[in-house]
Length: 369
Image (cartoon, rainbow, N blue to C red; front, side, top):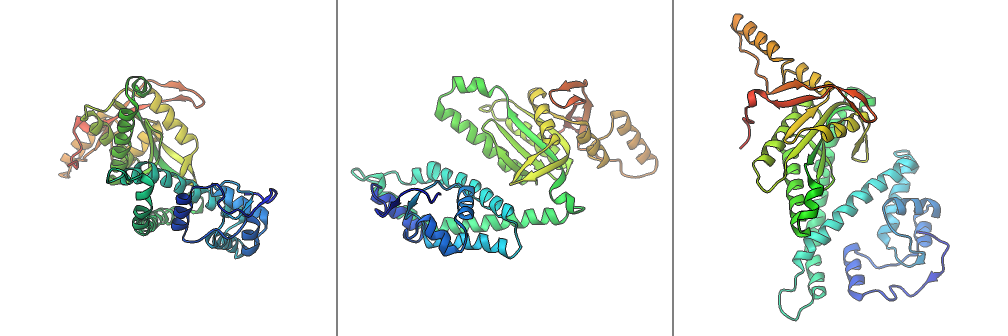
């Protein structure tokens, strides 16, 4: 939003009356302020207000009266956090950007996929616009309460993970298991399938992946149509999710084959996303993984061995079982098996040694239902 264009007193001139009514309903207030007036009322500079608005993803409106009391209050809150020393100005902008990007995607989905279906005219002769307003009026308070509930639950879970970190550095740069799961041959499918069919396939894949990741204790970082990225605090959890994804997709005849690449190591987290060499390595392993198979890097394999989720080799497993029986103890139970693959150069990362991950003795997941 800028302050250098001409003033527009014709509030809402040329705009659809229903769109204006819907905006007022959703925002809970009428348009009262130009950007300059809103910034002045909030006690912030126009420059800072513009940074906040653009970070939240709002378009420039010149000096039209397009802002409400809620916009002023939001500016005051962000600026107040900076003035109190709770956030730096750069961090406040980052808060605005992460919130804006996340909620923009949510709002688009709700309108495109959810609201659109609900506003089909119930009777001949009625238009969608005649149905939209009362539907939004009924849904708005319920969706708002639900959004706050889910956000609080996610915030509690995330805060719990952070405070359990070993040190302050781990709050930003953490050791995580990172995995990409990729549909095989998706590009060919896009040429053969109708758009609606393709959309249904992608939605089914994303839903299946999201449900499995959440249920098994991982975190879905993002979806990319034919690919999902997820993370877990430990290698065993990530491995369990990967195998369940492969098994579930293999049992669905409508789904293409899947391949998964995983790596374990230090990861930088920013705005809900993950970055770094570990993430890049997981992505590269995915691209070379066989169909319906999981490849992991050597650090991931070492972590599974260290935690007792997999033996270093079949010979080591046999020795451990023999030693336990000799001592009259319960033999170790390994969930996974690791098979070293040929070392190979990976673009941008040098030579890596992939390991093929399978369930121990080919057994299926005992906890599946």
